Length: 89
Image 1: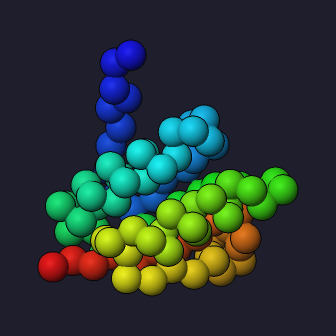
Image 2: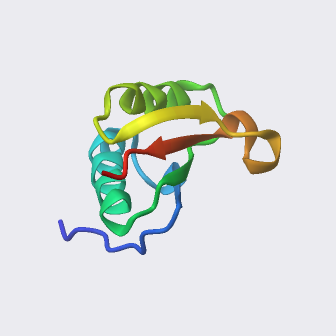
């Protein structure tokens, strides 16, 4: 399958991706964000049952490019999104 080309911004919406794709997608996305100097990102995972949120936050917990993360404030998606601060070194 051909790789999906998408513009890299400070926000990614995971709704269009299968759960099995999320780990590799986030790894690639976070690497590109650091390369481009984007220090903070909003990852939209949706509210649903919370399974995708837990998956995303577990990935962020162990990702070497992530300094810290928090659930998004209400105006930025609340518990349907996570804000990650990246290590720009």
